[in-house]
Image (cartoon, rainbow, N blue to C red):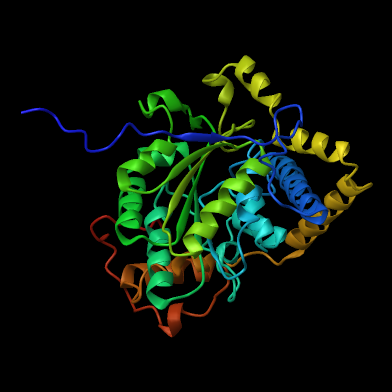
Length: 380
């Protein structure tokens, strides 16, 4: 029997508005006011300067390991700029700029990277999930949020962020399938920065693009120049409007580059060439957008100093906070803490000169020192 074509050969579109030299394609330029353009640039600059300051803080031992965003500011700010406060944002672990734009205080983020519990807690009225370290696990959560929004009839959209490495995880494919089946209002934003730690994109997938993976799940996919904030905004604006109108999910692949380290515990010189980094530095999103604003006479005098002052004030607030209570490490793991955990907490409390018992419970009198299965023996 002859073969029957069920689907015509698919096409994946690529969008770029502002080239590496700051030249604008006016036919594709999104409708943004001068104040919007200034706000976009300020948010990108704040993200970059905060990133640089946090690297210095980490090297000085004042915060812990974190994932820098240098080079990915346009992908984050151009997309997050399209959201309303009532919409939901679901970050992975490299969305510092987007989180600050969404209202996370800088000193709160510093607390998170210093290992403090409260640093990862959104404000009560904030429609954001906290930072997610395990790769791609936030994507089913985002789709679940979007399903709840749809079920309740809320006028909201969910935007979920992840990297190219996440597309090699089962969670990504499950989330995409669930989103397509239920036609939920979610926008997937993949920051394809070319490297999943030390694994290059070409060793993760044989697909020419990540955007085309959307087609298998019955939703549109678009690839954009992720270093062009105007292109990212235009693509995200279209996707958010589609989702809000009830037309379902979209996958946006932002082609960008991680100019710095994967995390501050990483040495990228071990696996990538300096020539590659220099090539991508010529496409720096911040430089590109600054050139465009200079041509339009929209750069604000003294902006860098004001941004630096804002960051410095946040660092002072962060470092003026009282020390964290180490006993919080025993909380939030169990609804009913097991005796062994209570005993361990009691031992630490004694060393820390006493603290209230966990959940109002008094540790039992002698506890069998034999460790439970999967539990280490407490050293005394």
